[in-house]
Length: 387
Image (cartoon, rainbow, N blue to C red; front, side, top):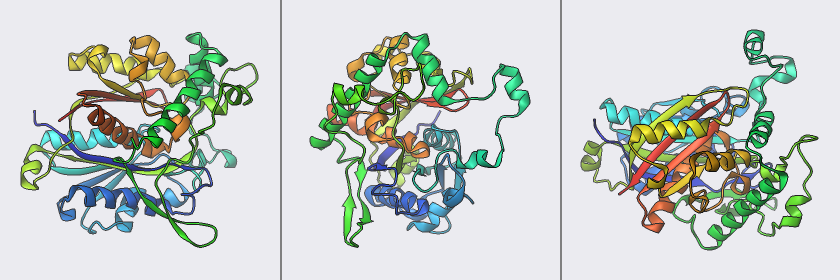
């Protein structure tokens, strides 16, 4: 089968809720990453055959086909088509999969996988219209699983209980995420993956947003312990959950034929694409089993993987993943994760891919694995090989 290559992967720095990126329309925020991927790779914009845009909150300013609107807000010609997809938190990781599949099948040669989410302007859950009394889960679904409803928060607490994770365990993990993200930022580890975003400050002056806004440089065991629990009797706090975040990201996925035709130099090759689904109640545990499947299909063991990016939706997810797989904690989210850097939902898939690709290359390492828990009990796994 033909190969699929990552020519570049990049992201904006994260913006906190109602923070530095909140004044930017989501279409314009998505266009920042589309423009940057064109500028950095030198690809002829007219050669791009599709843009696959992940976005979870496809309502309000992100409604009416956000993918196409991002293209129209960018420098890409209007001849470039787009599609908007929703696989919940894995939306833009699935965009990478769809782009790679198109290239590997020979149907297309040059595709951008991307994602955007302005959680400040389109609050999480807006598309569910729960405030109007609507429910995306029918009574038949609830009856099938004997529940009154489905909750990622409840699922995360279930994982913590199942795997014997205490409040202290989670706090220590969350603190480490901030420490790693702070160290990476101060060392310039994100410089090759972050693209500047021009913002307007309250006084009307302009500035470039180039650093993730959510990192707590002064985080300490005491400050983590002082955050109240999300649910009485639980173990998870806001400090051990992913931060609400604004951002966009993109990756250019091409065929070998396109590499030669456009004189492109790839950063990595797609080695495996896997998606699985399981229990929608505990919901967020599926990355554990999806990783098993991906490694089996790739003929690899967890020890063959040099770095892992496991989305920190809630601390119990990567912690349970570590225990299940026997992976080396030192190789996990080496530059911090969503607890410190933020989780811009539909943009997080290509965001983590950008971090993984550049972290591998900075260390001279070969194989990387990315996985993401997703609403409904679904999980994507992508294995890449640097070149």
